[in-house]
Structures are given as C-alpha cells and as structure tokens.
Length: 376
Image (cartoon, rainbow, N blue to C red; front, side, top):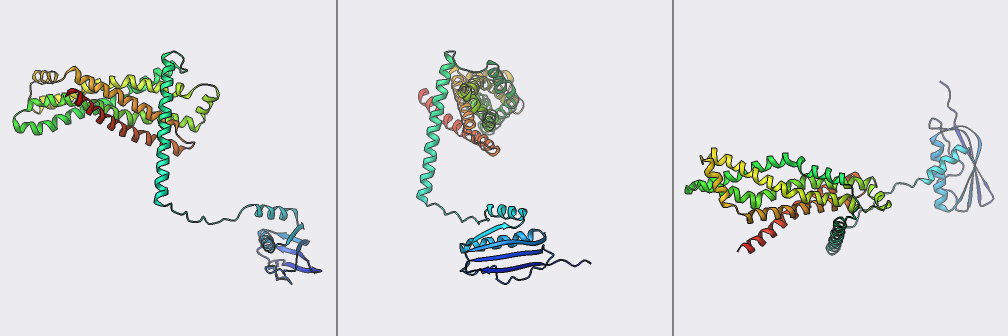
C-alpha cells in the first residue's frame, strides 16, 4: 500500500504585523495535517495581514478549502487582511465562491400580532376587497354599455361557445338534480300529508316548491360549482400565463374580451335552465305521486297547474337571472384577482364557488322577503 503524502504548514512572522503561511504537500482528507507553529484559530492580535503561499502543494481537495475558509473567517472576525494571491487559482475561486454563499441562519420565530392588530388587518383586507368588488362591478357595467352601443371588443364566436358551455352542456347534471329534488319534495310532503288524508296536495307542494324556490336555487348552485368555477379557472390560468396583460398591451379591455361574453351567456341561459329544471322537478314529483301515492295522472297534473300562477313563474325566473348574474360576476372577479401560481388558480376557483353559493343564498332570502311583502 502506497504511503500517503502528508500536508505541511509553515508559519513565519514578518515584523510585528505580517504572518506568512506556507503550504506544501497533499491537502486531502487522507493526509494528516500537522499543527503549524502558530495556531491559525488564534492569530495574534498584533498581526494585521496573513499571506498564504503555495510552496509545493501536490494535491488538494475539500480539505484545503475547509482550512482556507476557517482562516478567512478568523481573519474577518479579527479584522485582519487575508492575501490569497499565492494559492492555486482553483483554490482561490473555491474560497471566493464559499464566501459569497451566506451561511444558513435559522429563522427567528415570528412574533404573533396582538388582537387589535389582527382585527385591523382583517378589516383593512375586507375593505380593500369591497373596493375591488365595487370597481369590478362598475367596469362590468361600463363594458355592458359598450356592448349595447356596439363598441365592445369581443369575439361573437367566443360568446356562442360560452353559451353552449353554460346551457346545453349543463342539461345532464340539471336533469339529474331536478328530478331527484322533485321526488324528494314529493316524499317529504307525502309523509306529512298522508296523516291528514290530503295526499293530493303533494302536487301543490311539488309545483310551488319547484317553480318558486327549488328550481332556481338548485340551478344556481349547480352553475356555481360547474360554470363559475370554470370561469375562475380559465381567467386565472390566463393571469398566470400573462395573457390578460397581453390583452391590455394590445389595447383590448379584458372586461370586454373575457368578462362580458361570460356575463351575457350566463344571464341569458340561466332562466332557460330554470324553466327546464322546473319541468323536470314536477315530472320527478309526479312519479312519486302517481306510483307511490296512487294519485291519477290527470288529477295530479290538474292540481299542479291550478296551484301555479304566472306570478309564481316570474318569481323563479327573476331569482334565476339574479343567480346567473352573481355566479358570472363572482367567477370572473376571482379569476381576475388570481395570483401568478398554480396554487393561486386553485384558491381562486375555490373562492369563486364558495362566494357564489353564499351570495345565491343571501340573494334568495332577499328576493323571498320582497316577494312575500309584495304578495301580501
């Protein structure tokens, strides 16, 4: 086995202020490094300059770099000048690179804000969100005015595609939910009305419940989870890809090109989906009434249509149009507010769905109160 060459360190003090450190031999992890005449970890305070010299370094690896970095840090700590000009170029570059990378520092624990500060930050964030929502609503209104005057910049083919997405492509899920909701209303009503021998009133319950309330409400919630989320994800992805910024650069208002077609499409298609949901819900309830309660079909439908008036249908259509408007505005707003990362797109989509459903329930409660007041 070949004998490993040892590393040698010789130190010489020149005068009172300069220390020469001469290195020779192999500075590797396999080689033994003898102690120098002067402890390099405790350089005398009188030394003002340390000069490192290569006097026959035959081999070196990270062991040399570790030694040099230790000397450098000791010199920096004592305010001593370090001269590396006499070392191999590779070693000088490695030391320079090591000194440019900052040492890892453990992050200090973040101080928890006081209750008053947290309330203030939440209030400020809520106010900023309100201002942004009002601004977005105003820009959407101006964009709608430009469309009515024929000056809006958007593609008609894009509007037609979004109409297809909001309407015909949503018929499947609306069909399933509406039929089941109508059947559930009939089941719930039958459980109570059978106690009084008034099973025929199940037709009134299903008809009124679907036309006035459940048809519009369930359609709005379906569109919030399906279409509103899609709007937020589409526009949010365009924000990530900087396509929205590109539209502004080309002089095309994003409100016209992105928001307006989606807004118009959803407001137009939602009332039609509400009518479709009403019809399917009544059919779903009729299945329960006819086959489970043994109500004759003619009697069931006559009772249903006699309990529904034009005013009831108008209430459902007004609610449906409002829900479609809220879903479109919320989805587009969250998409425009999206950040520049994939996680931001997910957050915008989630926020669009949650906000839309909350607004739908609030709007439904407001319209119900207004209709009850007007009807009274």
